[in-house]
Amino acid sequence: MKKKIVAILLAVLMLTMLMSGCQKPAADDADTARTFTVGFDAEFPPYGYIDDNGDYDGFDLALAAEVCDRLGWELKLQAIVWDSKDAELESGNIDCIWNGFTKSEERADQYTWTVPYVDNSQVIVVRNDSGIASLADLAGKTVMVQAGSSALSALESEDCADLTATFGDLLEVADYNAGFMELENGTVDAIAMDIGVANYQIATRGGGYTILDEAIATEVYAVGFLLGNTDLMYTVQGVLMEMAYDGTMLEIAEKYVDKGLVIDSLCLLD
Image 1 (tube, rainbow, N blue to C red):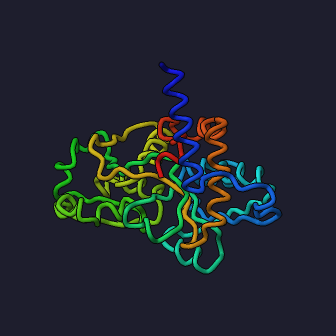
Image 2 (cartoon, one colour):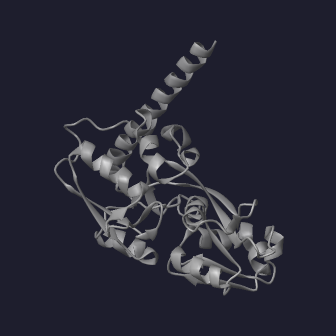
Image 3 (cartoon, helix red, strand yellow):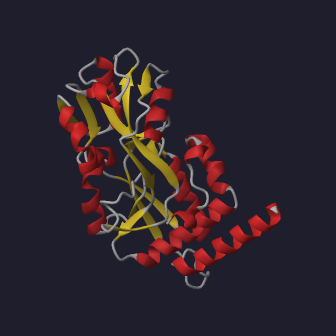
């Protein structure tokens, strides 16, 4: 019975790949010998950051490096101001936005997206001694969020309008490292952010913080290309799928993120 189910799932997967254009392009069709410029936020660990040696590192950057290795491309990592990501993409300074980039309903038609590869939620982080145990406890509190982030979009959406209206204040910050300094100093009461980043920040700071059980939004990460740039998107997506199927994606994830967040059945979730 199990063998029959597996066979059916494999058949469905292959059909989905053919119908959605998810298959890796043939070698003759691939855009070889090119420079692939990835735009990312260097203050967004574990997806993109500067390591102790002063080098760029992160889960998304490691995925991009593997994609380029397999395609024979030269990878160029371009750190950007996250709030200026659209201008960087539209000007041609970068080929894609790849750094914990949320494929939300609001953004669905603004970019040409790969299928999602990370399951992500927007959550609230507080200090353990804050006395805040639920979203309702945020009434009258000061909440901080990164400028131009998915968490900000979620809090400004209709779904979160009632919640956001209860805040004493909603402040924006350039990056979450600075946000955690504000939280530690008590100048803000909570931070809204991606769960993967929240887990990383809490772990690297030795605890002292709590993620509220109630998420403010459930979302996914994908790679965003300029709207209409389907050829480049399909080329990168095809290699990403190959990496998911052969286990490389999970191997890379082990160094950076909770593997439970990684989507390794990519095409089925488009």
